[in-house]
Amino acid sequence: QASANSNKPLALMDTQGSDGRGADMEKVNRIATFTLCFSDILVFSLWYADIGRYEAAGYGLVRTVFQEYLKLFGEERRRTMLMFVVHDHDDGTSLESVKQILETDLNSLWQQALKPAGAESLQLGDLFELDFVSLPHPRHRQTEYEKRIGELRSRFCDESNPSYVLKDMFTKMVPINALHTYPAVTWEDLARGVEVENPTRRDLVAAYRCDVAYHTQYSNASKQLNKWKAEVEDGKVVRGFGAQASQLIESRIDEYEDATSMHANS
Image (cartoon, rainbow, N blue to C red):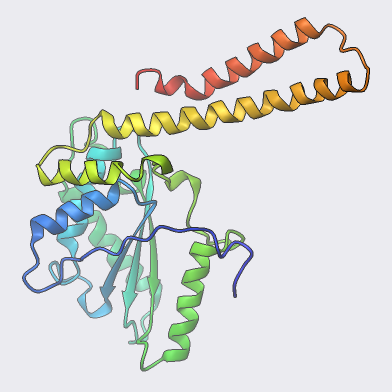
């Protein structure tokens, strides 16, 4: 069912997995790292029959995602969601049993992942929220498949859905006005083997958050200023205008500094 929020813009990146014949794993890993820089949610598709098979299930790629995410976001402890969509789950086993198998495998991959200094004690759940979805065969169980697809779509499009996944806590806060340059710079750095963990990303995020804070405080101040303006236009006198205006400006500046102090060095 479509919701009032179903037309909310979403940016989707459909990237190559690691199960293709002759896959260039260096390129696959580079794409995975590139995707991490932007994505609120990473969706991994795998076949039910491949669960537990290291290469076929793409476990090597998952371990790469863990390692690169630690470099990019481990220091700031930013979380993201990893959603595993299991296809052709038709043998009658419960999703819970599939979930237990995958969680065991993922925790093992997390233990194997190389971790930068200071991140050795981090657990998988500190940086990732895991989610598991299973889909039946689209030809053998078409009605059930379409129902499950609709439910999955709702989790991305309907903010009133209790299982809505696009939460603020997952956003990478890449400013929209930087999307014409930031992806190109990020990809070029990865192609040249340059670590993406550099001031470029932090500066972009800092600029965006400072801009949001500025416009928030400007809007709050404008409401009061417009109220005073309306009173004057009605022939009223704003008592103690100087003191009130000074207090308004100081309070807005204080609020702005509180909201942006974490980016003082960016």
